[in-house]
Image 1 (spheres, rainbow, N blue to C red):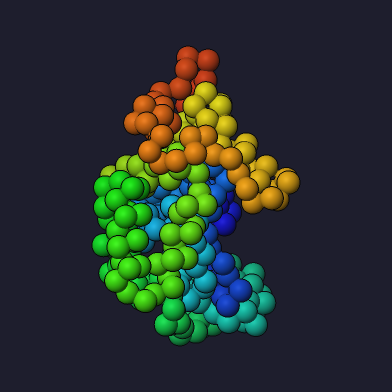
Image 2 (cartoon, helix red, strand yellow; image 1 turned 135 degrees about the horizontal axis):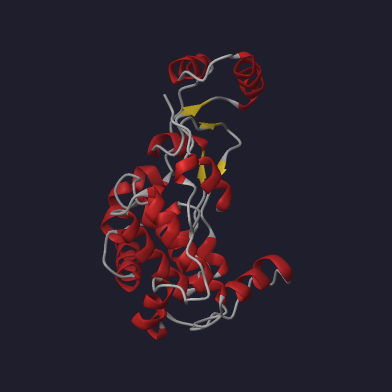
Length: 258
């Protein structure tokens, strides 16, 4: 979840199992998906990335395979066997690693209630330009079809920080046209702006409500989408002050992967 996913997803091989849970729940604590999330979420099928970023909804291992977040799936009982065989390898040849993982891979499909089977409605709603339009579209769909998924999705959106929703939507949209490195640099800048309290203390309030007091009753500032101005959102994407240094990635130290 969150930063843990950021460490894992850039890997060449990503093995999911029946116990795997993926989520980017940052909007629920007044933050934004970071650690490269705006890059990999924006490259998921359709507008699934916007859905995951804004709602913080969870995916299981089968769903991760279906959308490409995982490259392999194995039942949990096989994981010790995979670890043992990988530990015996004396090569980093990707084809050898691939053959090892394929040997223990299992075929799996998302269940009928999965968001993967609702990709059309996800694209229809989460492909819209603004958070307000996304919510209006979901409410319209909820009135037309008898699907509990619409209601649960709306509840997640209404639990999240309004400012974080708008910041995160823009982040995913920008990430779709940036490199992984550019996303990391921008997200770092956004994170510093987010914890500065110059615009809002939502991150601190979200952590208090979810992790400290655990009353799950954050008092967001601003409290509604209507009160989140463009200037507030723009601030997250603005350059840092002269006293703050931008993220410098150690690109020259990267090892070539053959």
